[in-house]
View 1 (cartoon, rainbow, N blue to C red):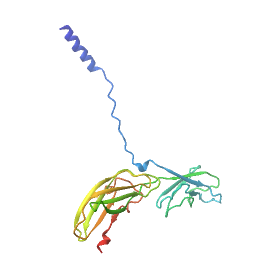
View 2 (cartoon, rainbow, N blue to C red; view 1 turned 120 degrees about the horizontal axis):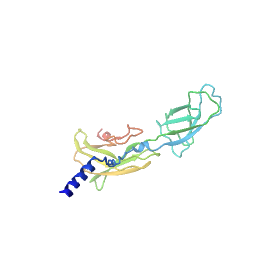
View 3 (tube, rainbow, N blue to C red; view 1 turned 90 degrees about the vertical axis):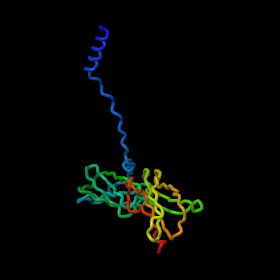
View 4 (cartoon, rainbow, N blue to C red; view 1 turned 180 degrees about the horizontal axis):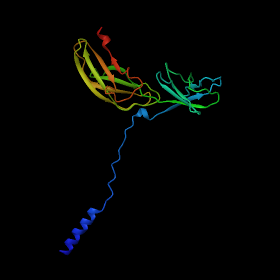
Length: 221
């Protein structure tokens, strides 16, 4: 009885001691690939009179064209800053003029932009003795890769009937990468066309979301 009572007392004592809480399970944060890259470009003081506002020169010092629509952000060592949205591709070695909010003739600056992938359907064609359709997906951006995405494939008759539909997974793509997906299909007995959409589930944040659709309806006319 004494041993039993002592054991019970020990258990009661343990229950009153504040034990350290178990470590929380590590939370893994999946960071979209488009948040992981910053590309630096040239920024220089042109040396001209800038008594009203700075007009630094932003130069593409990379080996690839910076795509239209990219936002070049710059900042000067006195706190002045600004941005330029490209109206057209900026070729390697080419420059654009920026404008700041403060005057200044003596300053240094730096500039950069954050690239985004740009997925598109490059080609759709029959393969394997017309037992499958090959869909070629490309990433048009030369600065950053794209994560996995879905591709929606449709075969439609020229009358508008859906002859086949399929959603398939596309692998991650490297910078300027290309991947090919084969979709099992047979040639229909009626006049038809293909409609394919890259990143159909909007999994990838892209620089241009308007060039994902490949539509061959023109063969019906």
